Image 1: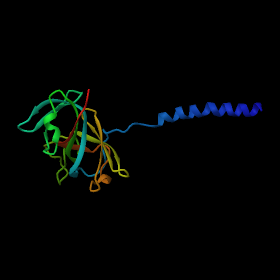
Image 2: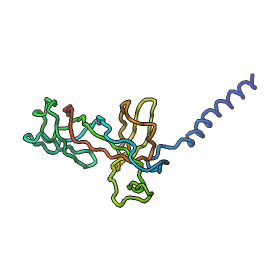
Image 3: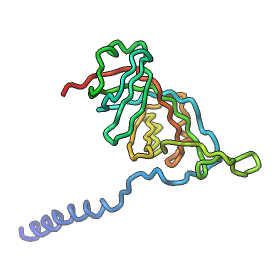
Image 4: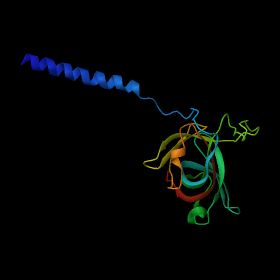
Length: 187
């Protein structure tokens, strides 16, 4: 009986020790790697919907139908509001809202922000990317981006998006300019 108790005690001690040792084997994804492959545009004009959650309305222009949204980190951006957004007239400066934003992505493989010419030399003009690919999950059609401010966003990619050609570290240019839905958050 004591022999079984000793074996059980050893196993009970080994399981947490094994689990603790395995935590050192995982590393978080890194968007700062330089992916391999031919430099250039991987795919452009990829339409996506991004959710801007818990943003504050900093300014409203009813004549132009625009809203300036301010994030917690202090950055702000002005968006056009689609005519289909019926509650635009209810939104006031200072409101905390959730906004669905239509955006267009272009994914590049760049070297120091530059594309290469046909002869292999780099172009003098840089491309101003504002995010990098962090994770690509083709089975669920997910693309996780990390913006230059550290914010991470996961988007569901359409069937026409060439996820198999994208990799962590690819540079992304995202242009978002139209709000397609608004939810006013109650304090």
